[in-house]
Image (cartoon, rainbow, N blue to C red; front, side, top):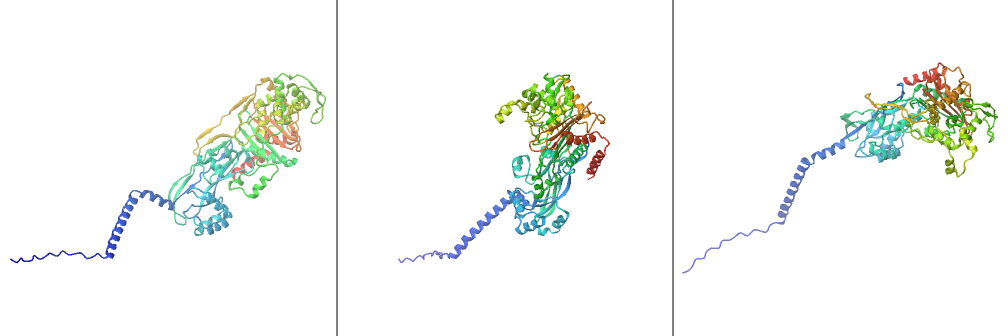
Length: 617
């Protein structure tokens, strides 16, 4: 039987895939994957990192413009302003993402008259987002140009800042000090204390010592800026906190009297330098501190000009030296206070003993300054008339080692601790000192020199005032200071300074009484009687001095305290190369005392007028 054939089912065979179609499919898969990744990344950036990138965006359009805190003012003991602040305009650059072009820097340099290299140096050394201060204390013309032509000066803003104003200019400059922009070395040393580039800090005097108290806390404005750095919206303000005020011990009347008297006397006698210290011997409060020649602290506020710096730096009498505390001079006959106290306390002489002065000492032919012979004299007479021969004998009886002991007891050879920088120690000579420094023995003639304040002896005017002050206060030596109180801007007292007793003379009261008697006679009948005399309205005790100077004329000295019944004023004046102290230093001290005790004289009236004028300014 024939079997029918079963038809075979045909399975379709796919045609070979076109290469182009395959590539499209692969590319589509890749694109789809990339889109998915981008979407995932976008979600991640928006959800998880959104705040971070928002801050970055704000950083490109938001700037903090600091508001500089005004420094605390300085007032004298009676509330008279000495150092204040005045408003000023400062041209500053905002740090932008793109640095200013050379064209902008050149245009700014010409307008502000600041070298382009100096501006570029400020930009290169700047760190952070604070404005870069280019020039302070702009005049109204420059401010107008910068405000009206903002498009020509992209990134430049005008800040209103307080600027230091020293009302009395050169007077009192060494005590008050000055401020200027912080240096790189200072910034490195103080950066942990919150100081930043461009900050104004105290460089000298009280401005330096009390800088952290008077500098205040800066505030600021948060502003939105456009692409050129121009502020377009204020987003918030933090007001600055003013620095604390200093209420000083200085009396403006006495300070002005001292400055005027020194200037007048230097002109009259042809001398070039002098210093004066006025203190309260019962508290250590410094009522005036003057050093001439001086400098104007206002020169330094905006950066001192080359012309002004050259005038100061090339002055042979060193205006920047505070001669009242750094100048070291042989004390001359004012040192007889120390020698006389030592001789009486050690029993080397009694007040009644008569010593004959033939015009020279019997052991070594050392004479009186003028060659005179005073004949038979006792202690009080010798001190009143500043007899060298008598005190040569005191030095001979004491010896240099005992003399050194009392010199140091009076505070010479160490710093007083006054709240000013760069104080000198003075020098109390001894055999050991000469051996260590000159590799030589001590000679009896050097003891004679030491006994009358010559030779190796050195004191500062401040130390001379404190020697006299210890006699005035019955032996107490108080730490000198220039600040009574530190007062916050809201009026509350932050710190108050009380009298600080440093030491007390290990001397019997009757010894001090004899020394005081001799000093009282100096002004009435002795070497200062020509200016004072017995009819001076205020009873004073004093001592003149003339110190030999190997480099020129002798230095003139005068120390005094008043009134003798209850001393509240002690003065020390030195005139470099002024000659006899009775002729050079005494006239200065008299004008100071006239003002201190409000005596009616033409000069005292002029002092009062000067203070009134400065107050109004």
